[in-house]
Image 1 (cartoon, rainbow, N blue to C red):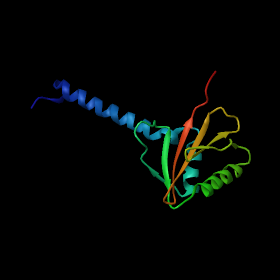
Image 2: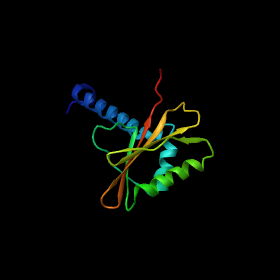
Image 3: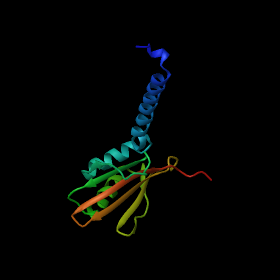
Image 4: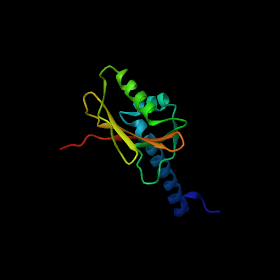
Length: 140
């Protein structure tokens, strides 16, 4: 059998595996590596949420979750209470809704890191499906 160094295809395959591992690690950091990583983790714990796989096409700055059993109103109240407990370090925007989904943005008081969008949707089975997404600040 030929030594590894004389097999260019084997070297290329090994390099691709290493690259795939590095990309996978970067994607795993995603939201948790953002300025809102700790906020996202604490919100998931506060809601007793179970992280789930997101639909294909969402980027790595998104975490999807399920709260079961639950309703949107108590989840929204828990989010409001969480922000209030941070004494002005976090701000919360107005809630908006449409087509059965509710959305609010949580931001650090200085707004330099963008915001954390929280999406909640109640299914007909006493279950709330949600999404946390870091939305970087837009530069003008």
